[in-house]
Image (cartoon, rainbow, N blue to C red; front, side, top):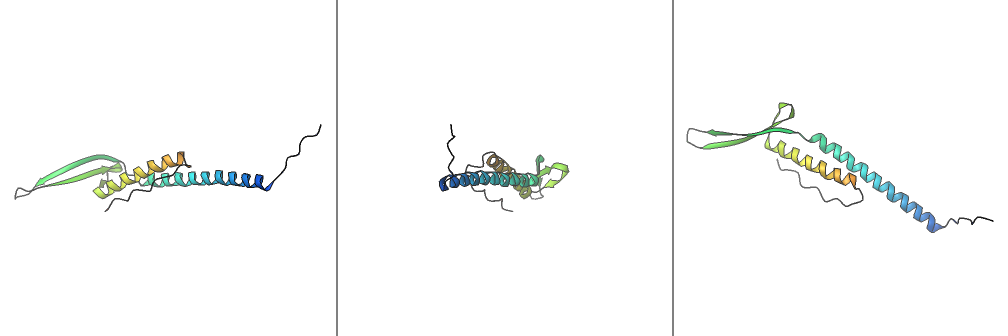
Length: 114
């Protein structure tokens, strides 16, 4: 008994190309998100300690200053600490997006102002 011959049609070829393109697109998007995760994680400074200092001048006015102590004992400014938090949030966002690259991703929040 003869086996039925498989027919190659234009429609069939278009479906194969569309499927392959979708798979390649999803994989490329996943790689892009993974590279964004690596970038933002490299910019994160882990804050080991946060403390405040209050100084009272001769007129009785008090001035409070906040300090952040980052990894390796580096003192951070408020702007550096906020920027580090922003990078940590984006690393988490893109990590989730890399796990599900077929889903839409919301726009990035604006970077903290200096």
